[in-house]
Image (cartoon, rainbow, N blue to C red; front, side, top):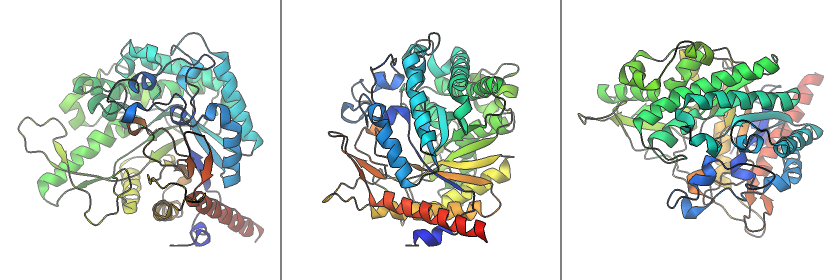
Length: 459
């Protein structure tokens, strides 16, 4: 392993190190202080949807333990904290009456971050759609885009003076593909029509939220967080190569193209453009310039051509991971070079603003032994990926920071609490937090970078 100090020397002076979480995964307090129900509150109560019926009702109890959690982030040495604001805590019905207690909670949280010298990187939407909006069609309905814009305006009016960078939507792919096409996440739809409608409505909601936020504070740095896929063909033959190109358009291009080019790819429009329900002016709203964007990366995607005559676009099948590759405990292939390839491809194909790696991390389910969590596999994963990040940031890609996923173990959506991504172990029965060895490693890296930066600045 490369030492944390040697790795730290490869990062630019102004590079930002942070940690990331999401509201539904850590807050708990689901029925407290006027918070309304979200689609995940409902989805997790449906039999067979979430592992063993787990839910975010209590999660990591961050709603009550936030001060100690912020102290923990500060002790790690992090420069910034990326978190999400729970839409149903601000607007219990998704629109209309504002919940003052919800505003007060995020006031306390943000002020607590500032008191500890942490930069504030909130995300407006990390999947907890207010359940009331699901009755109107949720993310398949145009009305939800207007409700989201109103919510964005409320957030910026209340917290905009203390925000360093604001993200609209976290991982549209999960909101659309995973939730409306594959049925794995809430609301659990398996409909191509619903999927297509959600793609355009999520893109439009992003654009309307940017407009709404800037109408309140024109200076607020606005971005979106995309979990893009580095797509590789199973073989070098022409059919599989073409399949990988289609997969890139289907999984990445449906978000990148409208946001950064102001259009959908012609192949996408031919395949299902009528289902997108595009109206005049939509693409202009979606494609307004951004100040930054976030990239979430964990594992590559491998595909092959689907020869079935009735195969649905993009006519691909999943291919096996690299046989020699390490797998994490959730089964994901470890391939740091795919992150390098993905960043290079994106900046070659699109005119993109500055980037943050807004999520990156690994699932390893190590438990404490005599108070120590020796998660060497996670450290290895982080070291490999942060080496790629350092090379990119020192090269031609405008990469400004890295947010490790995740600060602590939490509710891992359909996987419940059985999968652990945190650098801090959480005992869900007692809510005791235990720093894993990966947390100490990350602290050493950040501390070494700060020391090196001070030395460079004094020269």
